[in-house]
Length: 97
Image (cartoon, rainbow, N blue to C red; front, side, top):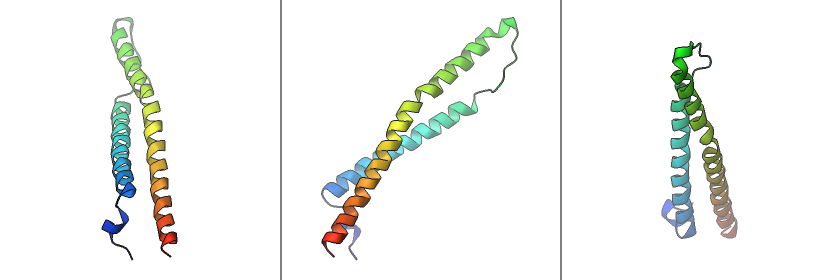
């Protein structure tokens, strides 16, 4: 059984660092979207004088919608890097078998 220092050297170390950074960004974006969604109302009953509340809700929905693409991109990048790291680890294990 190899030690962690022997496994994470060279390209594996850089891939692991990149994966951890992208995963932290992905988790932060998910938390931000959850916080924004908690302020969103499903239904608002407004009179004519409360149009500013409708504008606030629309701005909130636009901000939540704008987060969809970065969340999707970082999620795919994180998953792809994880698969690449696992593949390289298995390749090294088979090579040293």
